[in-house]
Image (tube, rainbow over all chains, first blue to last red):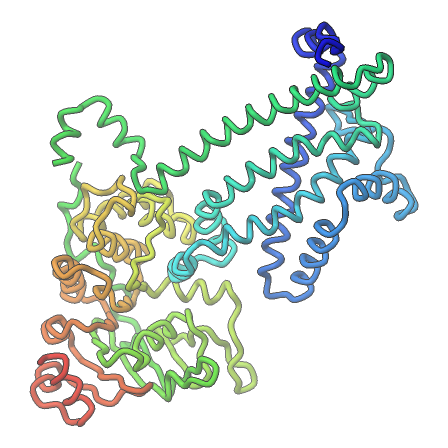
Amino acid sequence: MLATVDWHTVWERLFHPDHVFLRALWTTVYISVAAQALGVVLGLIAALMRMSRVAPLRWLSGIYVLAFRGTPLLVQIFFVYYGINLLFGFSLIPTTVSFGFFTMDGAVFGGILALGLNEGAYMREIIRAGIDSIDKGQMEAAGSLGMTHGLAMRRIVLPQAARVIVPPLGNEFNAMIKNTSLLFIIGVYEMFADADVHYSTTFQPVEIFGAVAVWYLLLTTIWTMIQAAIERKLAVSERGEELSFRERMLQAWTPVQAWARAR
Amino acid sequence: MDTGAGVGASTVATADVGAATTTVVRAVGVQKRFGRLEVLKGVDLEVRRGEVVCVIGPSGSGKSTFLRCINHLERIDGGRIEVNGHLIGYRERRGRLVEDSEKNIARQREEIGLVFQRFNLFPHKTALENVIEAPIHVRGIARREAIVRAESLLGLVGLSDKRDVYPGKLSGGQQQRVAIARALAMNPSLMLFDEATSALDPEMIGEVLDVMKTLAREGMTMIVVTHEMGFAREAADRVAMMDEGRIVEEGRPAEFFVSPREARTKQFLSKILG
């Protein structure tokens, strides 16, 4: 069976990526990052709305999560890209989107929007859990010092919640890298679209899709390593073993003094 | 560098001594319910400038709740609380009390320092950063200036050498002393202590009480909810006994501990003093 695999094609796809593929790879990466960033922002807004005193804001947040967690991502991508223009009666997502200094393909823009909206619904729950995990006394202490709710949230609660939020956020980003492949159906030329083009000219599904799977695996593996490094760093500070910059310098330069202080 | 040296009376602000009123806290008929449970059933208390009032009583008597009402961490269901002549947490509108805006409540709280039983230091900030946080971000004081003052406050509580240490590496007593410095950094005209030594190991209680005694000597107005009768006897100008949501007896410590009038007080004191 394996003898029928054209190993040369696999080798070429993996180790001699052409210019077009590299651009598709870059598209995959930047869509992932942009959509995840959008998701975090939307998730944070929705989480804060969920905790608001104003009831309609809470409802809006609930409806948002209900809609985007309860329907297929693929449907959302189609709906956002094709549907919104019709819904609003004008071209909300034109064929090219210009941000002044650089322009973006309309499909890429729509794709980022759809992935980000979907991600925001999941991030809301993650961020809310992170905020809930912080002791109520922190908010009270901040309040007793004259901080308003918003200031206390920004300066005291969210920085601490970030430690709880980062690990699941990492998992979300891992999923996001893979979900970008769905955008091929609205015409985004990312890694999977590139593979599909090659497949339709060579009819070598095993070689082509196998190779692109390895590329996705490479991206997610690199991310897993980065994520592990971040979590290790956070875990150290959580154990209270965090040293300030000054202490670290002291220990590095005067080991004798550090030894004396430790006693 | 140890900057804790030059700590004198100037560290603790006893601001506006000459102000028109000498009453700092005036609580009248304060009521508070948690659902069906009536926690405060009309508490009256007046505290004058520079006075140290210790509130004692069995657990569940409402002492902590009352203290938390004074800076509006708890809403009240009846009565009124004034600090420095300002109604706390509420505004009067056509003879009725409506809750004040968040901004106004925050501003009122700047005047009132609160020290918690569980310290509640910000764990992601060093001792110094804990102390300078509110002066910089609430008061808008320049960082350099805030640091100078924070260093002298850390000196006051005897922790100049811990300025760059995170709370996780401090003992309970040290954390509580940082928490006191943090509250003092806002120059409060009133300090509230909510069982500040109850969560501490016995050998650390003394160091925190010593700081509180220093504050009392320097003229800070303080309301101290405590189980430390030794502190109440030594540092308090007045002792108030709370039971079942009311202040049942009030008096100077000399009389209060020697010859209490009320049966409830006698019973409580005999239990706690053995």
